[in-house]
View (tube, rainbow, N blue to C red):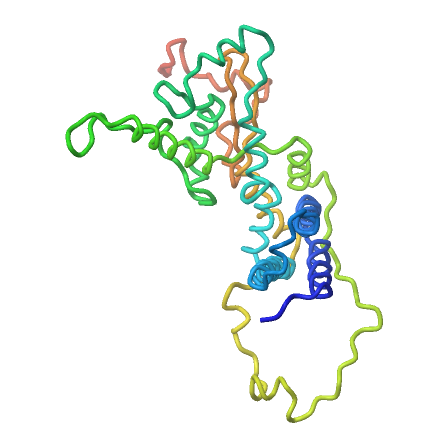
Length: 332
């Protein structure tokens, strides 16, 4: 095991940025590029570079970067699961961006006056007796529990209760101690945050809806041809590949073990965009109930439950029926 040279890091960064530029989604292209650059700059600008001389640490970080490079390459080749994973990360359904959106979503409002500050001070300490989770967290969690498609898509673990279930007695028949109740509330709240799908910013949501509706033009990204190409050395009977892998085989299904690559077309991308759209809540404020409401997209538009009404033929609907809704008997 040797130290990773700066040339190897530079080569790896260029390969990652090259694959980011080939992603077939505009939001994913921008986010993955920014995420890759931030990861490299994070270690470059670290004021404590002592761990950078650790060979094991370098090997672990390099392995993580190679895994991300493999993920991006398979996504650009048309493998549905790697591409879906990249879209989930880019639209904040998993990964670092989801945590950032969730932190912004649950940030409490700053008190505006002295009375609001006094009420905030009187509230119980977090996870103690009388503590209640933020109302917006409970409202979003309730909306997710009512959505059957989230369980079918199975992207995040779901919490089945809207509040922590604290038993009245422990296994010894005694009252549950305060520390145990506090741990139950803490564990439930962290599990609830882990299951939430935070709303998207308006800009990204409008891009997603535009891609689905077709109002935003989309075309598959064409790979650039290397200038001059690569000069292949004449093969010999005892080249390295022959000595390692043996004689060349015919067509096999070994490359298709982990999935089949697809041609990246608009139809293929629309299915993935629709799946992402089902995981994005649309938040609005209900002025009557004084609470937040969340609406969700469905994987497929359901069949229409009503037909358009033609005003000229509206009276024909109730022909032969009296005021009580009973059929009028015809007299012969």
